[in-house]
Image 1: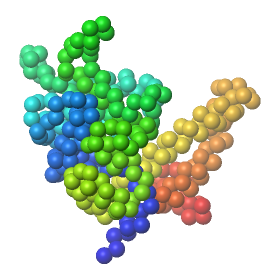
Image 2 (image 1 turned 180 degrees about the vertical axis):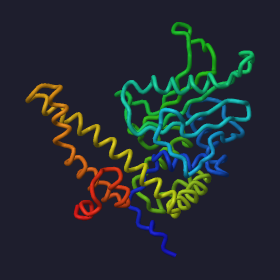
Image 3 (image 1 turned 30 degrees about the horizontal axis):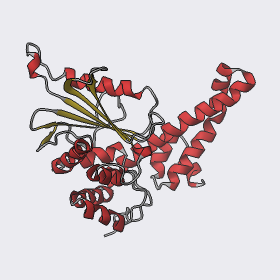
Image 4 (image 1 turned 90 degrees about the vertical axis):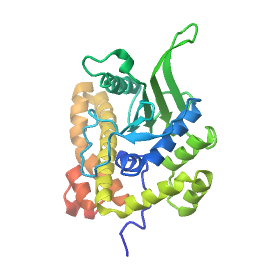
Length: 300
């Protein structure tokens, strides 16, 4: 039976809606555990035996308000809380956001009247599709150390940052290397995934869940909405900066930003719509996200 998704030319495995499904849908514990342990192994930390998902996947949830939730949250057998965030856009101030999310989750561990020994480690894992700096570090692990003796103050704060734009094959430990290959794949050919399965058997289950996802019209519809939102947001920010600067040189920065954005609005909408259409996203969803009429989009 033709499901309508066999000819997907490009699928963004970093789409946070897909990642939530992969790691927190029913029965995903083994996949999630393997991913977390790949992070631990790469940084020389102790691995975990089991995890319990605290944010079960629900395809109806609206996650556009990204300031209030994390993508995936679970608890290990020893009580450590692990939070996973996927971020496609950001800047040099993003570490403060990571720390804020960590602090928010750490503060929730202690109920009123409980003693501090009830607190457990919170491990923050952040997959970033942009570079925080110009270093060569792909995977960085941050904890609290004394600046002179390097003595660890506490293991309760552990922040992992993975900068995917810097990823090159075989520079990390094998397990994490395999996972990052999966997330950065640009080609959907089955033989490429077969090679990953040979490296890590858990990838067979990952591939099965991927196939289930792209065959599900409801989930692919939500995926498309998220892609349109993310892509449109990225392009508009870039265009606003460019147009604002160009006009700013002519009539002053403040007037330039206002006028440049206004004059370039239609151009932005068409540019975004044309690229979303090339990605195979439904015309109705494109119309909802760009404000263009369906007839206009069909003619692009």
